Structure formats: structure tokens, C-alpha cells
Image (cartoon, rainbow, N blue to C red; front, side, top):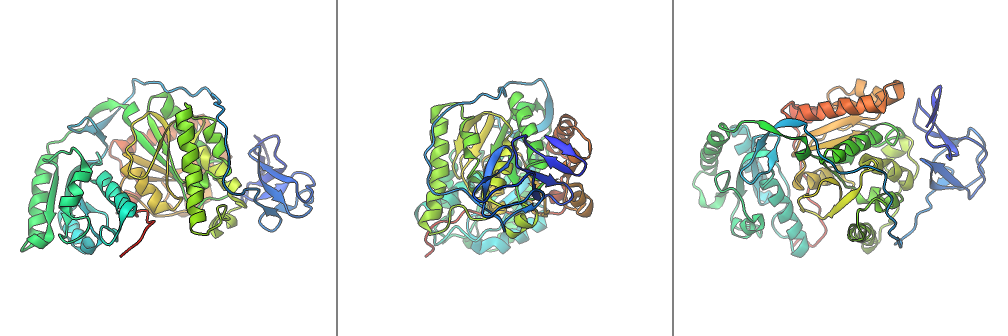
Length: 466
């Protein structure tokens, strides 16, 4: 990586450099029409016209190289990041089944959107958390199954010390139908209330929550291995700095977590398109490779089934920040996974079980992706952003800015500033600082989304509504 004055060349083979004052690309040399634009050492598209040295390289003169369904071959590349162990510990709650939680809150989870406001009233009166959503009825087949898997993952999440599952009574996803979706669960800490059967559902719910509070009041944090920590990785509102600062920083932390036996999950499948080969070559087995191929091509087929272009250009905010093509965004996005080996591939509602880096099916949409990560069992989500967002999911959602200007301007949103990588702070030092901050959040320090009271979910929708 070559950094001269206020420009940056990321890889020696790149034919563009980055203007660090704005995050946009400029030609290192003359580039002919049709020639690949190289950034991060890989093509991010091709020139649609001749581009002169030092000319701006962006949407007006660059087009994606990507096309439809691809064939892949398994060729494992070992980058030396081994799954290990650690003597380091952090203070957390150990649940009856051995799961570890970093919060001990009471959660109200409603089975159907019809009682969102009821859940809100109960939660606000009780000092609990609630997660409104519009689903749970009038859904069919796999669409309903995804809703049930997501809600079940919330109900059983170890960050919740106690849960009230609130039903209406007449919904498709009524309590009798939903309970089997939970499998085994702690009946002392997970309670149920059907509101149509109550004379005063608010009073009855508050009585149940009082019982749950009495139980959780006895819980104490104890030392647990840092290898038990599970981290979700997400980016939103990316810019030209994302693949230079915040995403590589998360990648460095992911490497560190893998070496300590911890767990990280990378999602946003459409933002793997164009960089999926870098993940596939790190799959630890042919089985994991085949699952990765199926996930990537399956998501392409989802786009095609709805007659939508697979390689949609980045969003207006991404473009304003300097990102031109999906390849460019993806090559920056996958850096959140570092160089750790890919040990598993998860579908909607699957619970993560393996150390190292797992990939998860799902869209790039912030709310859906963070919800998916949360229900998989992650304790914290590291959310990198170059544009800024106040959003927070069911678990602590730590905002990492790609640039110092954003961190300074949005102090009420940004928890950690990765822009310091461009100001002389080393990757090793900043990784140490980020790990220390993550541990502090795991031990109870609230991140800004928690302090602001932002706990939102969104459930993936792909089916018929009656």
C-alpha cells in the first residue's frame, strides 16, 4: 500500500489511486477504452472510454464486468490464519444450556404484527425491549417458515435473560403453532401469553415480566473464555474509504478472533458478487465450498426470478462516496472477513456453531442483515459506515466510521473511528483498541445505538401474502 501526501495506491498493480480528501479514484496512467480498471489488485470494471492520467474514474467512464450465473472451481488457499484458543476471558452470563449472553434484558417478542402496539405498551411499562414487525399472519410456505425461524432465534437468544412471547390468538403463527419451532427451551425464562384469552393483557403481561425480573435479578456475570464471543460483520452507507479503513480493520479483528477460537459471521450475499472467489478459496472443505457456491448462485437466481439485474449499481450514497461498481463495493465489503478460513455457511434462522468465519445467506439491507446476524446467535454486530446511520438491531450494534470527519460530525452515532488508519495509527494498534472496546461492550458498556434506544428488526420477505 503506497500512501503519498493525500493520495493512496492500495495495490501495486492498481491503475487508479485514491484521493484521500474525497475517497474517489483517479487514473495512475492513461487507460484505454475497454481496459480493466484495477483496484485492490483486482478488476472492478472496465473503461467505457479513453481515460487520461489523473482523470476522475467513476460511473461516467466505467462499467461493471459482471454477468449472470458463474461456474467455480475449488482451490483452497491457506493464508495462515488458524483456529486456535486463548486464555483470555471476559465477564458474561452463562445460561442453563451453556450458551453465553452479554446482556440480561427482558425481551417481548410478538408472534404477529397485529399486536405491535400492545408489545410496545408492555415493554415501555416494564422497561423491557420489544421488536415490532408486520408478519406472522397471511403468509404461506417458506415465507412463513422464515418468519418463524427468525422469531424463534430472537426468543432463544442468550442476550435475553427472560422472554415474554406475546400472541394474538387467531394468527397463522399462533402460540400452539410457534412453540414447536423453538425446540428445547428454558421454560422458567421463556413465557407465553395469548392476548385474546386475557381480560387485561397488559396487566397479565406485566405480572409475568415481574416474575422474569425476579429470576434475572439473581444472575451474575462470570469469567468465560473470549473464544465464546460471537461477532456479526455488516457495512452500510459505504464510501471510498470503506475498503481502506473500517472493513480491513474488522478483517484484522476477525483474524484475531479466529486465532483465539472465536466466531465471526459475514453476510450480505449481493455484496459478495465480484469478490466471492476470495471467500471460496478460503473454504476449509469441498462441502463448505459447495454450500458457498449454492448460496451465491442461489441469490443470483432470486434476482433473476424477479426479473431484476443481478449486478445492480451501488446506491446513490455509495456513488457519492466514490464507489463505482458492485465489484468495487464487494472487494471492499468482503475485507470484513479478513483472511480467516471459511468454516460454515448458514441460511436464514440457522444458529452458528463453528469457530472461525461463517458466511450467512441474506441481503445487504441493513435491518434484515442485522436481524439475520442477531438470530444466528451473535452477541455484537460491528457495523462499518462511511455515510453514517443511527440504526441498531436486537444486539449491540457498534458503528465504526471509515473516516474521521464522520466520527467528528456524528458523535451521537459513531462508536469507533477507523479513519485514524489514514492518520498514522497502525493496523495492529487500532485492532488492539477495537478488541478492547468490543470486550468492554461485551461486559456491559452500552454502545450508542443502545443508549439511543434503537432496537429494530426486519424479516426477509419472499412469498405470497393472503
